[in-house]
Image 1: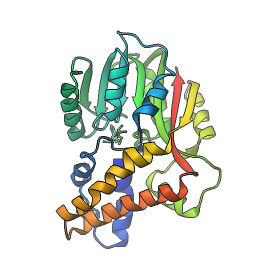
Image 2: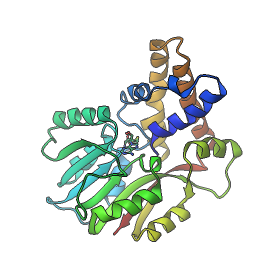
Image 3: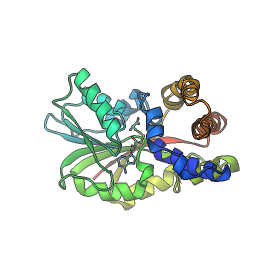
Length: 270
Ligand code: SAH
């Protein structure tokens, strides 16, 4: 999921209940918060590597796109475990700046290019990519919409590998549904998502759910450590207080209801 955008949606909702208007909510503030972390959504290197193990068409010549790359945690794992050229795209310029800095630090600048752009308006030519990657970002635009749109940018026989927020059960606790359906309008079960993959014209190759530590160790724990510092920096700022309490609520929901939902990595072939 696009953590960045879905938080803003939930935040808008809370704000309207608590009087301040959306004008008090600052997208740059959210990014100031998230840019301090290695990741901006749940995920971990082990899951990236597991997904990569299903891709068998890569060579030195391969072209890979990482869409909604954030500051590039998974981009670096891809670069260090493949030999092709990676184009990493995100809508937020600050994320791309951080990605470029990391790329230089790791000596990967000849193989990783960062660009600012939108995943639903790609600045690429058709049939260009051997692999399209996306972690934690597709649901800001929509799973079905993106898979359908991205297909023309893949070569024949090319792969996609994306994580998507997924219901694990057919019934969910009302509290969980209320929160997530407000934040992410369409959430499907794994079966529903596999049907979407087929409907969009791909062969499903694999699907597996991310392990708990992708959320707890790599996403929630770094936030817990940073929240007090952020609150102190913005002491008295109601907007920041609501924002942080929202994140804490999300973490609480995960600990209470993780058996009902999570991220699933979907891999498909054109
Ligand atoms: N892949 C990273 C970031 C996930 S957060 C990780 O797993 O750590 C979701 C990212 O999607 C954010 O960086 C956000 O800026 C980006 N994003 C949201 N909507 C987008 C769009 N329409 N086009 C490109 N990037 C987008």
